[in-house]
Length: 133
Image (cartoon, rainbow, N blue to C red):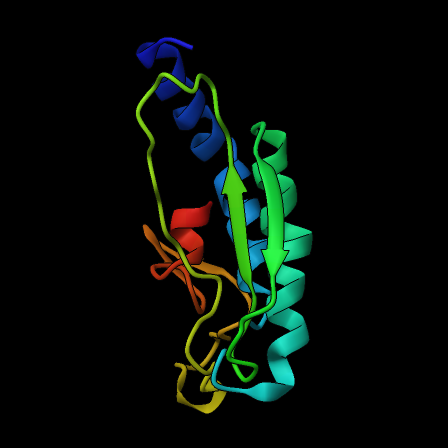
């Protein structure tokens, strides 16, 4: 894909609501890493949300349990277009800090994406679910 086509595709994804829909679905998954009761949600985020997204882009994925049992799993996604090309490594995390539901302004919820003018509110929108989207 050419650079211009890639930019046009990204603009269309944003302008037609794809970005908002994907981010809303991801924000709704309460991936609080500090809360042991949310371990299944973090795994669900990786296996049910991120892995299929990577696979649609041609990546092979594996989820590894964290060797330090009290921490969440890892998703490793790999795509080799040509072994002669340079390797690019990227990092992102699926966990967020505690939702702190009571600390949010009236009408806002950490697990429900909300648009207010040109701002989007929801836990993980800036770190790191927005980047995933």
